[in-house]
Length: 386
Length: 131
Image (cartoon, rainbow over all chains, first blue to last red; front, side, top):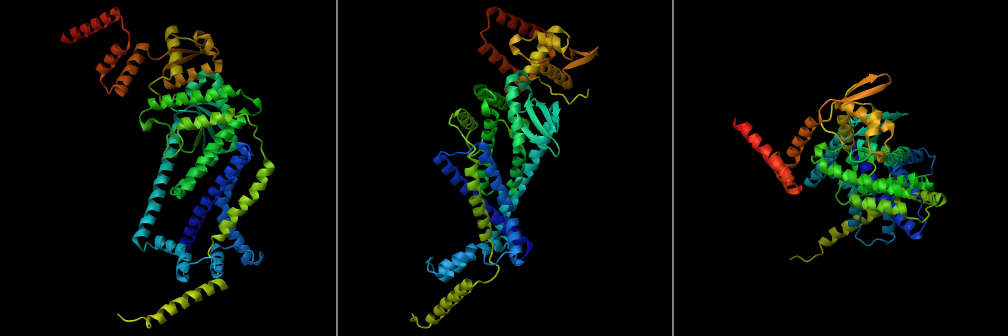
């Protein structure tokens, strides 16, 4: 197997594992909501980010596991393989389709890989082109976003500096946002906010909480993966969940324990939205609009395809803020949920691997396919001539 | 202080500060802060930051007197009014000042005196153009 084949296999595996993990997450979220034991948003966000890290690390974990197995550190019996399991089920009569069709089904992924990598058919050329063009487009868009952000940061007025955080004032920023450079963190505040000292305090608390949560780093990481996962709807679903939870977690942390007046905080969000919408209308040309890549804003004012409108998102945030039902961390419950979730992710990663060698069951399946072919050939002579 | 590439226009707060400075002629941060309505409750540091930004944008000039910076406007109110109107006419009225004036006359409840003044202005302009 060539390196390209191997890399493409890892890429396909990652997409499948991401889809499965997103489905698992949605199920877990639904169960948490139904049971009434909804952990704090920051705990949910931590769980979500942890699962995503596990998805990305799963190919490395699989390689390590297979190496340990090859070195006889881990017994060979401790392996799970989806294809082997399906063959075993087939031989026991669990799957009722002709043997040749079943074998063809098993080889589907291999044929898909070959078609795309060798460009042996128009479909293969179309898929490979789509992947390459899509990745190139989203990489360029990401680079353009970084350049726009850098330009915007350099056009800002320096306000204050604390440690490695710079506070900047901008005339063009629609809403306050946080960004991260190679060394420094930046909090950008629309300069008009200086005239509203109470709002300014709340906004700074919110943005500092984003930096503490590491939200900007996660945003950059997720955006950098977009060129790889651009066609996968589960990537967008996952990113939407991260964006939703990080704002809710941030709001919850800022307002917890009565540290700030809830009403003042909600009104601050509404005023920031009003001011942002007004500025958005004033900056008519898209070129004038500020950067939105690799940054985490107080409010998302972008109208995006198949996403909730900005006003609906703000409505949900305020609803969550004024929800007086106590929300505990439920750390014990989360710890209990983490192990099975992580187990399922890693087992899926393991089970998607190609079998290392021919098992008895596979030999048996191959024998059945050959016998069926022989029978077809033998019965050809017995058929009446027309 | 290094001046950045300036922005041609003032934000709402900056305009408020510039309006006070135009009235004062020149003044320190404290002078401008005292001119603002008391309900603004702006901290001295915030006012100083806004004045520093105005300095960076080139709207004001500053000189040090003892430990205090004294700011003076770099452009007159009339000049800024013309600049803003031209921008408004270009961006919102497709570069047709006549539409801007028409909207102004339609929307505002102009008194007879206002209308007479406008008419006089237009007559004067027409006479100037003819000569």
